[in-house]
Length: 161
Image (tube, rainbow, N blue to C red; front, side, top):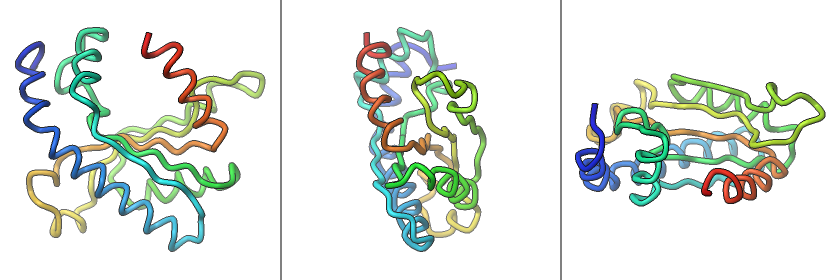
């Protein structure tokens, strides 16, 4: 269990690896969606060191329990394509966790939604990836444009405060 200064130092040293992870996950998803004919916007990031530190303190997390060190968001142009993109995520990666947050909301509620995944690379990808990133994971969020808009607003209003 790595907490405090040890976790901070470790993440600061390993952050460039998570930059590589999110770029590779985004590349795989961008190509897979293009092959499927699904227009979408794919963005990603490695968590900023300050955000990582805040999460450690706020949530009493450890290095191992912060799962969004690398993150990718896929926004299909059309809300009806969200399910197809979720299937592409499941086919393109080893999914270790999945939650469709919109299912829990009900039709009369609007909150931070989308289908969230924790993914790792498939064995077929491991052969071509640098070994230092091959075993790292990434959070993937598949959201409709409306869910993404609300996610940005609610993240700033509730999560960041």
